[in-house]
Image (tube, helix red, strand yellow):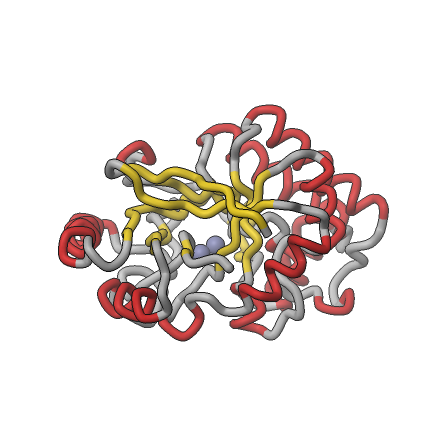
Length: 277
Ligand SMILES: [Zn+2]
Ligand SMILES: [Zn+2]
């Protein structure tokens, strides 16, 4: 079993609980390590990100909790960076998650994980209704960003699948789609062979998706390509800290992986440790 989660949000961005409530809940669940990964500020501003003037308080609070709970649980101070992040130095964190949440053209932008309708409108407006073109643009932005920032973790690789249960928006088994999604896995691994791809159960908790990101064909491809994976729940409250971890581990095993990584704290730094699955 996995006893850690490096992808969590708190009231400092769009989460529901304080960092201390999250720490207590994680300790009660028997977690060995909890990582905090607030949404960093972006240009243009997005409402779900931390307010820049709060970053100092937030960092101080995470560092305080590291001290107070040192004998009960390891705590890591991370960040979820988006492509258009601003106001933070990635090197100042214990670890980083690189994610893309928006597609932009000029001054116009759409969140890809807000609602199905928003994503549909985005596809019409930017790509003339061509979902493969949307996917190609999304994966291109994500892989470029990952190569640029060299993060610890790649966030929710196929986030554009969030509202695509039963192919509601596009055919994710279409070879054209899979070719694009796999090519960008190759591109990332060519530059960042040790990066961890998260197997993220966040949308299972928040909108009833049956399986975590990435979808099974991409998870199998990650294994074939020699990628490393880590389980997270992209948790925004204490109830979802280890939500559906058993399902995520089953998907990882079904894809043929023999180990999964966890982020742990060692000498004040985050280290990726493998465990057998
Ligand atoms: Zn995210
Ligand atoms: Zn997140």
